[in-house]
Length: 164
Image (tube, rainbow, N blue to C red; front, side):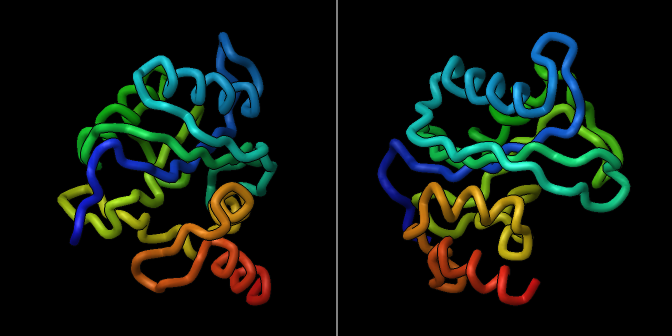
């Protein structure tokens, strides 16, 4: 892996399907999470529109999803720790996989290419099959290439739509 020189660019997926006591509906939770990123010294460079998507598995309610491009000096494990801290601020607790959540912040890509450590893989291992990640990301950063396949986000989203 050849790491980029800080600051790094990251593609982050944001999702919510539960109301928050202070922020309200899931789309407002996404907006508040973006504000929290900026308040934590993470430069939000671009934001996709929020889309509504059906829930996967037992999550129940539909999700509000978006993507953001952020700039950070953090290496991937440090950024992941910051994202998890923001999730906890919103009341997210570790729980069942695929369950309802107030907010979900996932690292999808970073400017350093491929990264793997215990508990973190970049690119996100499942993003290529998830339209709720690819749709906002392809609209936001269509030319960003998946370091594993070489396909751009626009190409990956087009391929996924053809399969679906």
